[in-house]
Image (cartoon, rainbow, N blue to C red; front, side, top):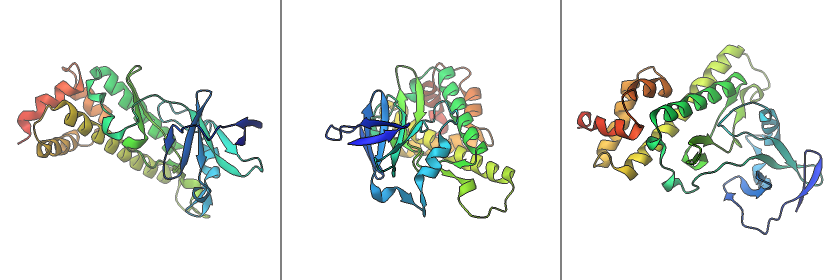
Length: 248
């Protein structure tokens, strides 16, 4: 089928196997880019056309949160979806493992970049959504932790006809919620690693370990917490093993 992208007509062979399929649409790979084509029923959500939010996201210089780089239109110029750079990594949620085996400095570096991306999005009034393992890719070759699929990200400035809140209040709320979503994702990924690499011997202890980290870090960000905690450890997995004596 033909589409319009950046003012040019392109052809996407939709008879080929897609690289992804979700509740909103189908993703195809072409020229090392991902083209997400929405189901017609998913173009409008919460009363507005998603193209408004997606257009707003283009050009925001996040590093490891992958945002649209162009919009896709049908030949009649109705909105069809968006294009992003492709990322590499395991597709199966149950196999998205390995971050705890990164060298400690690389693990912390990834956390710092992702937290910075979340702050940048919040500065631009963006509230992230669907930050979960299904929308996360770990490029083992490059050691990069990346978040994809900004389809449901909302621009809080666009959510209401009249906004009485000060800009700083909106940005602060967005940042708090964005960071919470990121930390929930990281916790899930840590859990996945612990299940596979088995530094503890029961799921009950794994849950207690999650609670331990949450309580131990207090007001620190995840990157600050792990930057301190991993000082004397080669990788995060070794650190997790050392906590076994605290998890009863």
